[in-house]
Length: 466
Ligand SMILES: Cc1cc2nc3c(=O)[nH]c(=O)nc-3n(C[C@H](O)[C@H](O)[C@H](O)COP(=O)(O)OP(=O)(O)OC[C@H]3O[C@@H](n4cnc5c(N)ncnc54)[C@H](O)[C@@H]3O)c2cc1C
Image (cartoon, rainbow, N blue to C red; front, top):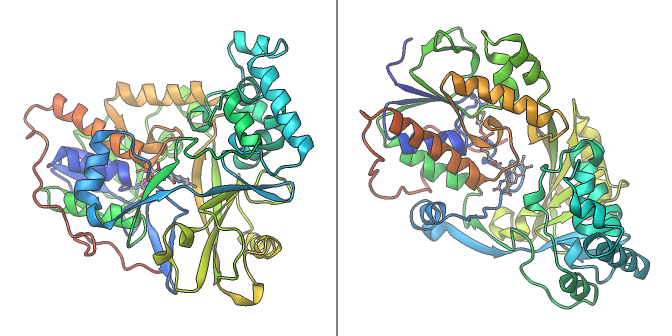
C-alpha cells in the first residue's frame, strides 16, 4: 500500500513521537513493536510495575520542563530527591563515590585523597592536565586520580561497557561523571553532608503508571493529529536513491522526508544502496546489551536506595534499581522491587542471571529467598553505544552519508550517542523543525488542544502485561 504522508518516521520511542507531534500533520510513524514507547515502556506483572529498567526524568530545558509539568504529567508528577548508594568493600556509601568517602576503610580514603590531589594539583598529574586525553582511563585519572579510578570508576565502567577503559574514548560519558573540588572530596571523607552533587540530584517520575504514562500523554497528542501511527510494522531495508522503505512484510513505502530513530548500526545494514565504505563503517558501530533481572519480594528491611552501583567484580551486575523505593505505588503493599542490570555483548544466559541476582540480594539482606514473589529477566539488545576507538569515525561516516541523502536522525540510537529521555524528545523536535523550515507548505507547530487524560490511552497501546 502506498502512503501519501510526506514524512515517514521510523520508530515510536520518545524521539519518533516527539518528531511526529512537532510536525503536526502529514506523517506516517512506523513502529516495529505492538505499542509505542521504545525503552520508556512499563510492564505490570502481579501488581509490580517495571519500566524497561528504571527511567528517571532529569529535565534541563524550559521547553521540556513546561511540557512535562503543564501538559503531559501535571498532577501525575512526583519530584524525588535522589537516594543513590554504592556497595563496595562490604559497606554502603552514598553516590557519587568521589563526594562520599566517609565509611570506607581508612586506607581507601587515603589513597583516593592522595591520588586526587596529585591528579588535580600535583606535579605527577601535570602531564595529563596539559595534553589532550587519549582514552576514558586518562579522563578518569586526569579528573579524579588513581585512588578513585582503581576503587570505583575503572572497575565500574569496565563492567558496564565490557571492555578496558583504555579502549573507550574520553567522550564516553564525561558529562555524567561528577567532578568535585578538593573541599568537596575532603568534606565527603569527613562525612559532612553534601546534598545535590551530580547531574541527577533530584528527578521526576510519574505518580501513577510508571514511565509509560509519559509516553501515553505524548502518544495521545500524536493521535489527535492528522497523521498515522502503524504498530507491528518493521522497516527491513531503505533505498536512499529511490527514496523508499521496504517493510518485513514486503510492502514498499515511498517517502519525501525520512526521520530515523532506529539504531544507526541496524540502519547502516538496512541501506540497500550503501557504498562499501559506509557498510564497513556501519559494521564497526558496536553497542552493549543490558539484561535486566526483575525481582518482587516481601519487604524484609535492609538498605534503602533508589539505585545502587556495584563496582566490584564479584557481583556480575553493575547496578541495582529499586522502583518501589522511588514510588511505592510500583509494588504491592509490604513488598519491594529490584531491577538488577547486567551488561554483555552477544547472547545472555538469563536463567543464570536470575539465580545470581537472588543470591546477591539475599547476601545483601535485601530479600528472603523464601519470600520472593516474582523473578524474571528481559534483554535490551542495544542499550549502551560503545564509545570505542572506532566509534567516532565510523559514526561520522554513516551519518554523513545519510545526511547527504537528506535523512534526519533522532534519538539516542538514531544519533548513536549516550543521552537521556529529554535529549530524545529534543532531537525529535529538532528534526521536525528542520523539516518544517525545509517545507514551507507545512502548517507551523500545532495547537493540539487540551492536555490529554493520561490514565486512558487514546491510540492503540497494547494491554500491559508480561
Ligand atoms: C539501561 C538504560 C537506562 C536508562 N535510564 C534512563 C534514565 O533513568 N533517564 C533518562 O532520561 N534516560 C535513560 N535512558 C535513556 C533513554 O531510554 C533513551 O534516551 C530514550 O528512551 C531513547 O528514546 P528513542 O526514541 O531515541 O529510542 P527507543 O526508545 O529505542 O525507540 C526506538 C523505537 O524504534 C523502534 N524500531 C527500531 N527499529 C525499527 C525498525 N526497523 N522498524 C520500525 N521500528 C523500529 C523500536 O521498536 C523503538 O520503539 C536509559 C537507557 C538505558 C539503556
